Image (tube, rainbow over all chains, first blue to last red; front, side, top):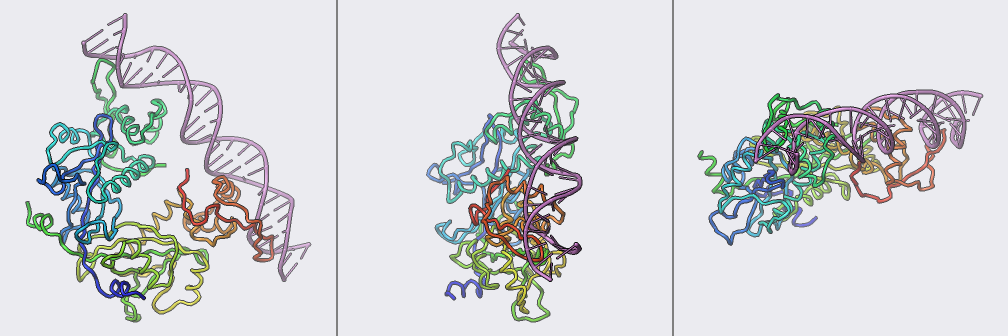
Length: 228
Length: 228
DNA sequence: GCAAAAGTGTTGGAGATACACCCATGA
DNA sequence: TCATGGGTGTATCTCCAACACTTTTGC
């Protein structure tokens, strides 16, 4: 048995644990990821990174992710779920840092708030044009994207990327943007309505010089259910 | 901003990180979980727990899980994947311990090896009759079981619970045992053969006073592929 | 010959796909 | 009146579920 094994089994080593959050939003028909400078206030030489920070001593992991997100980006009270834990021993140059990655989904209004007033510290990047990020954050985003695509097909997670009231065309654009392929309008609407998880609000959404669209809402707002 | 927040964001707190492994095997047509006494050699008063231990200072999380499993149970070189990270601040009474849970699947011969020679330290329990376990280990097993059931339906993970050569009836029993429902023999075989991931070895398996069964093998042994 | 598991096809229904035109509005 | 996106139905196909009898072997 190796010395390393002995160490591992007998000594409870202490390590740093962080959470990093992949925040997705849709803006201008592109899937966007929210990035921040790391470290903050280091200016243009600092690499872009995922929002994230160390887990506090008596803080639940989920709370840490939510709290860090709120603190660094002002975003709170959104859909967030644990993604995967990354623990390559050499992933951080200075010390052993294991990170529990999360992903979050943001409705358009809040995407817009940041998008129209980007700061030098925090901004959206289209997922297709990400810069080289801090540590393994590109890898984390890749996995989050895979998970998001998978969940579109077996859950009602897409509603988390829309306002509480939305048109079916907006919903379809969410699917098309993430899956990166066009869907048939009639079949798409049939499929969504067959889920019986949305209802017509009776309201109309006027948007341009064409027929206004019916506004729908989730029957159980905020609930992500598994389908099929 | 709370004091807690200040602490979290400014001080990289050190915590203990462990891995715990939910080992599944099928034995006597029951889904079984491998448990060990915690702490070892503490006798009958010690609670049963998942195999698991602290992550070493320069050890990859995945390696830690594999290594711990080998050390505590003698099992190595099996299918293992990361499940979820549990981080309630009060989950461990003595100190802050975050655990990265894994699950592993074991072929029947190796289940048998342990099953016919259980020790006071390590043994299988049918998932339907688990004792109350150490910390949140019952919860971890519950999640692992959910994941296993889900993956049966969109991947070829079931083969990991069989020897390299197996009969289609054995495969069907794996599905039935885990899903806890009977399947139609003809439909099951059609479905598996349609995947085109198994091939007839030409060999027969004689087992009782009845017609011998054809032995199949995976076309890509050991590979778990996603289907549908 | 009998008990026990292996092996094998067909049919009907549900759900998915393909496909094209009219509607309501603002300019 | 025209440009723009909203809204609708049908025919076909594919996949899944239901279902029962013959085969091969050991005893």
